[in-house]
Length: 353
Image 1 (spheres, helix red, strand yellow):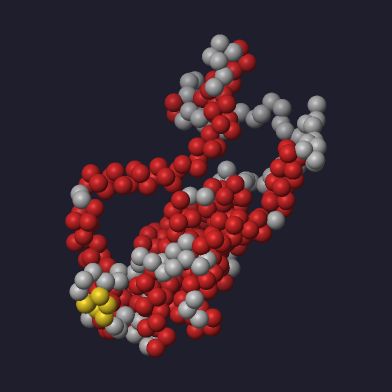
Image 2 (cartoon, one colour):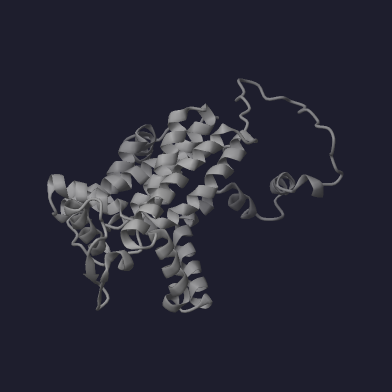
């Protein structure tokens, strides 16, 4: 029996029409959602670590090749900016360019950050479209995280790094699928630029060969393109060592090693903060639990005859093959009733969910 179509004049019908429109126009829907959430903060004053990036942007406007060539009093004493700021300067270059064209008003700077936020959200959608069947839901889940929305209202380097990281993965995945040089080159440049935006993006580099081997199943010329971000990082390290006496990646690493426990208070506090952060990031997942098949199945009474077979089938499908009895090794039994209709072609590589 076909499902009933909601009346478009009722609330359920309006919700269905809005959902259909969002699915047909995902980027417009994501942009409007971000504007509604972050628009009230476009005139937000510079605060906390935003000032470090603004001072660096002012320095870049006067001396573009010496971005940290000035002193700053940030913690009660005057020290070189290269020592105080343990972040790379790519975000400050962005703000220097925006201020050179539009001026230093906060609304212009936050508007530029809103565009960066949209770039991160659209990159999430493109990446999710390659990995799952519901990219819009995955994107909404990602951008609803507290860390994403709070960072989008600042003038710091977190969201720019995330946007570059995501688009690097998107281009790298497309390059692996299509074997086109332009995507490999774009992924390498974006990956190197992500590291020059925030040093923690260096963890992206091991992920690229892992994705490559999952897709290609063997080594090839695609590995050569991993040299692009490595060369960018090495050039930055060499250039900053000439300017400031030490490579800034090395300086940031030394600072992190010295303050790892002094600031956070030891392993216990670090673990507690990590659990709290992970819990906050995974909180939106709770909204999807009632609709999951496993949740609906296990919420059915145990004495339900219609569910005993379903539970047995569900458990057997998720049991590793070497744990099943009797074992089936060495042959595959064809289906008794093969499905009719057009079949999707088998795609070697990373499976879609």
